Image (cartoon, rainbow, N blue to C red; front, top):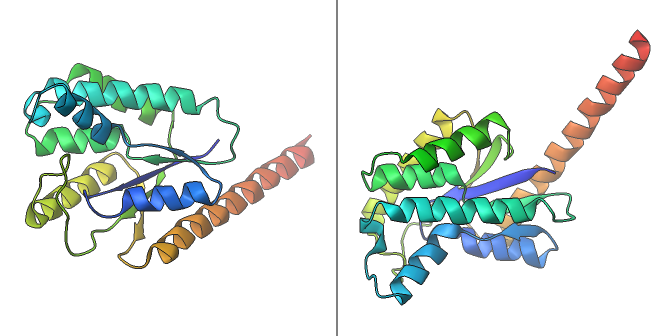
Amino acid sequence: MPRYILTGTPGAGKTALLRGLEVNGQAVVEEAATDVMALRQSLGDDEPSKDPSFIDAIVGLQRQRESRARAAEADVIYFDRSPICTLALSRYLRFPTSPLLAAEIDRIVQHAVYSATVFFVRNQGSIQATAARRITFEDSLTFEQLHEDTYRQWGFELVEVPAGPLVQRIALVQQTVEQLQRNSSSAQAGLREASGEGS
């Protein structure tokens, strides 16, 4: 089944977009980094992102959620971030790429775990701080560019989701996926027809 990634800088509105897709009946998978951050903070670690093990904890949770998503009976699944985002985060934090993260990146790329089309949710001109989001707007722009560069480095095609009303953003994502699905169906039908002609 097609698996589409939503990515972008913190505070860009990915979570709201994911909730909107879910309300519209779409299958979704939550972001892992925010939950790992919240868990570690609840265990008394006020700044978990300073520990390199934070990255591998994110990778582990992402892998678990991705594995569980395989069992979902859905035509399409939307993921809030992916291991490519975790690689961008690791680079932003200036950690060396861990063996676990490197292996996970290789796995998802070699096996085309996610669609090559990624929805890049652009910043909305400001950022609201939370317990898990401790970044200035200026730094978030650097983080945004790092995500864009990292996805492009690994050969993903980015579909821009510009700032704007949530309803418009949801519609853009769903309409794009519907068109991609139609194109894929047409291509598969063409291959079957060509195969039949050659037999």
